[in-house]
Structures are given as structure tokens and as C-alpha cells.
Image 1: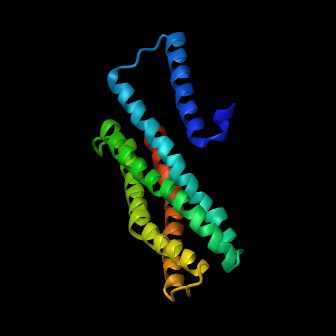
Image 2 (image 1 turned 90 degrees about the vertical axis):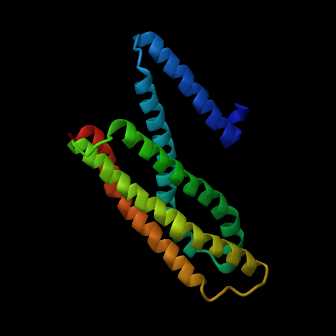
Length: 196
């Protein structure tokens, strides 16, 4: 079970397991989806995997990490922030991008018009997702990059820049807005398939 010690190997094992189980399910059930259905399922799967990564980290940052970082002193922050945040924000911002791109493709495949209530729900959820991704790439990440660099510099003995508190406030407020928007966004994503 050595593969469980490495998250990348565990993820690969998860994809292999999904393929084996999907093949077994198809063989046992006799279902034969059309190529269109396979395309929709693949895009939906990518959208869900990336979305769980993105929104899971969004909730971690807002419900756990923000409070935890406030409890640290400057020396502890100098160790934690430069090590944790670049990796976490890498998964966060790329998860946002893949989620939105897959979501746009999924809307194009399953809700290309605004005729039905499910179509309108999908487009509204997608619009909220676009706003959230804009916050990630336009506000959160640029400010967090500056915070990470300034924290590392402060740990090396340089004084923290006076703008650092402003960067933190901008990143926090954009993150809290995304946290708030994620709640109706998830409602409308579910409503697109289930309330029409």
C-alpha cells in the first residue's frame, strides 16, 4: 500500500479504479451510452473533480486557515505561510480555472440555450462561477503572492511593508465574497439538473 503515501500516486490509483469500476458497471448493466453521453459525462466528471478541489480549498481557507493564521506569531507565520500557501493556492487557482472551463463546456453541451428553467439555473450558476474565478485570479492570487513574498522576507529579517495589511484585507474580502457566492452557485448547479 506504498501508493497511499504519495497523493499523486493515490490520485492515479483513483482514476484507474474509476476506469475499472466503470468498465465493470457497463459490462454488468449492459448499458451502452452514446458518444455524446460519454462526452457529457467526462466533462461533468472533470467539472466535479476540479470543483471539489477548488471549493474544498475555498472552505478550508475561510473556515479553518484564516483563523489559524491569525493565531500564529510572526516567526511561526514566517515558517507556515511560505511553505503552505504557495502549494495550496496553486491547487486553488488551477482548480478554479479547470472548474470554470469545464463548466462552460458542460453548459454548452447540456444547456446551450436559455429556454428551460434548468438552462437558466445552469447559466446563473455559471455566471457566479465566472465572478468567483475572476476574484481568484484578479484579487486573491495577486495579493497572496505579495503576502507570501513579504512574509518570507520578514522571516529573513526585512521589515514587513506597510501595505501588507491592505493586501491581506483585499484577499480576505475577495475570498469571503467567493465563500458567500459559492452557496447560491452550488444551489443553481444542482437546480440545473434537478429543479425543472
